[in-house]
Image 1 (cartoon, rainbow, N blue to C red):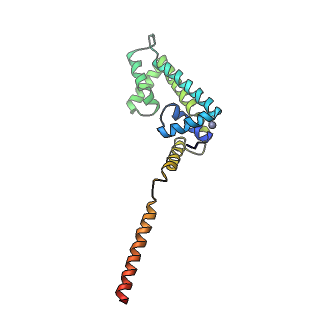
Image 2: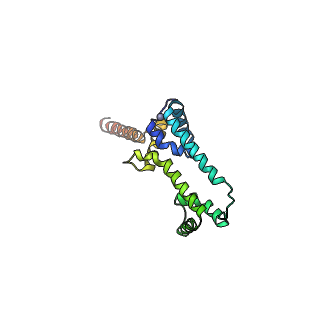
Image 3: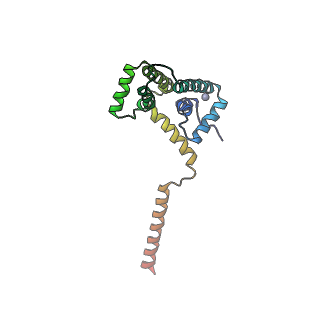
Amino acid sequence: MQNRLTCNQVSALLNFYVEDKLSKKLSAYIEQHLQSCPECMEKYIKMKSMLNKFMDIQNQEIENPYATKQYENFKTNLSAYIDNELNDLDNIKIKKIAISNPLARQDLENIYSFKKFLHSSFEKTKNEMKHDYSKSIISQIQHETTDYKRQDPFHKIITTFFLLITFLVTGLIIILYF
Ligand SMILES: [Zn+2]
């Protein structure tokens, strides 16, 4: 298997890789690149340890007067809130808890700085939409690997059309001259 990814492509995809959001094939390409590129490997290790640290914070059982049922609820909805997946009412609830509860506020700050760190690698690709850029890399790679399987439909149409014309002309000649 040939190495298909450049360092820039790997940096753009690394946060998805760390969060395990890529296809098996693409993950394998990245893994392959990491094995042969110390610079990207270092970046990956940094991200991975940051993620682990973050997960530890999330999973900690905290003995704290602010660790209320409301706070537990906040923690459950936190990542949906960050990803903008909550409805308006739930969004307001989260904001209210974050204002009144120092634990919640701290969590929110942590998750924001964590997300910011993860996505900072994108800032290089300033003219392209962050998500679209990695999507285009993914589809580019997927195309490269499936191209040989796909017959161009345009070719099929042209071939059919050509055959049809040949039959018609042959038929006409036969009718007219014989
Ligand atoms: Zn590299």
